[in-house]
Image 1: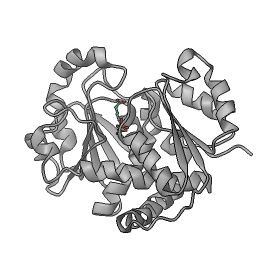
Image 2: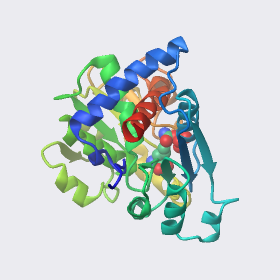
Image 3: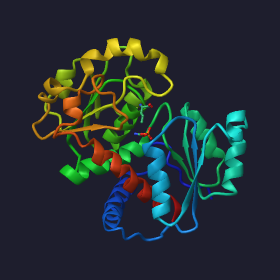
Image 4: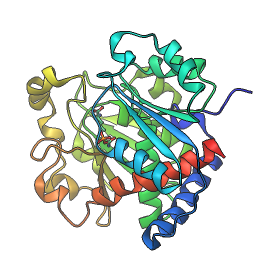
Length: 300
Ligand code: CP
Ligand code: NVA
């Protein structure tokens, strides 16, 4: 039988995602009390990082240790992956040694290919197109602090990137309205836009997009792999910064989220990132709990 994978939020149903979020809350309580259950004893997670990471690496590695399992960090340097061994071969080899693989890479197709050749569950730890693990943590954070997100308004500011695409999927699955404020030329993928019609609108004016929002979200203007476009993007994205004026357009009790790392003074002002509406540290911490629940879902 083919294993379940987590390549995008659409890999799981609405109810499965909610059950992961609910289990994450239990695991968070256990973490606070330092009373861990070794539910993944003897299980091994292989983690392939073809891009940098702090949160994703540490949350998966710490999560596996806390559940009684083990995680192996694999980077292009020092492995045959970086010397051109085909991903199809790596998938078949790792499937014979580990219980689950997390992959962070560039083209999303690379994760799809890996999953096709893998006999064990594959988790997308970020691709150029999606970042579903971050959405598990973001949804957990919202629900923990504000209850159901159904029918709420979320505004995405900045680039129509991997995080934006995962927010679009989340809008359809969790039934919230998403306004995307991005400069022309930086729209999200047209196919994903078509598939989320009815839940997602594109607004060029950030203030209009943010009006009455319950959740304000942004991300870096130049993602990993786009470093040489940084200067040009700073100019084009300037008016999409989340700052005090922009936050005032949202509801008074709106939350601010950012997957991090953040560039203060670019996509978000220091005052907002460190201000009372920002829940970015809780959001980052929730990566640990939501991914532990995801690992249990895929492995047990
Ligand atoms: N948000 C996130 O995925 O962070 P890292 O790049 O540090 O893993
Ligand atoms: N959009 C960002 C997210 C980082 C977690 C990137 O891909 O670099």
